[in-house]
Length: 226
Image 1: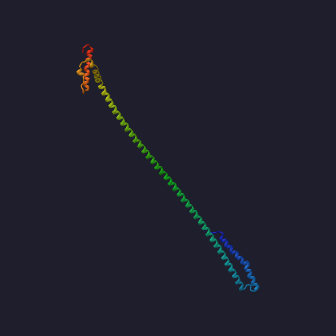
Image 2: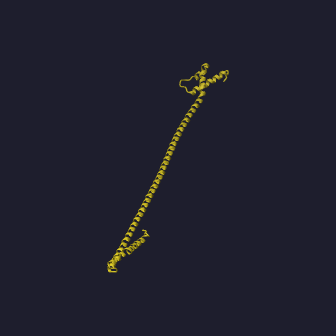
Image 3: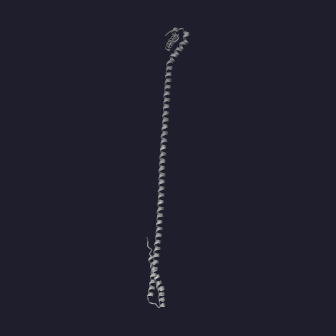
């Protein structure tokens, strides 16, 4: 606690003022009274001056005590105000610091939550991309299998058609010979027994009969020469 540098001067001034008042006011009055009573320089004058001096010193002490007491109380109040102000400032700083920490914590949580949301979103996008690609792969595989089946079926049908065409090409000469035999047989009368087919005759027999008829036709056209 700081000491008032003017306090001691004020106390000393109180003592000087009261002492001077005794010397200039009280003591001369006591002496005048003693002279008037015919007891100047007597014991009564001495007792009166002693009582006056004692009361003056008591007044000086009381005044200085009040001065110091008031100064002490003032200093205590000032110190209390300073302490309260310091505590209020410290509390306000602590509250501001807590608010700043809370705001930073909230911002940090928001940032972390934002990153977590982005991570989940990216994971969801990756999952959707994988699922779409997987479905696309499955669809392409199914389309490839379908095209392969259609290709195999087309090749099988084409092979069967080619086989049937080959069979038809192989049978075409024999069918033509059979048709010629049936056309010229009634006019030539040759080898009618050989060219006549019985029910159930094979295609090869018809072809042989047609072949003989053609040979006979060629012989007749050549003047009976084979």
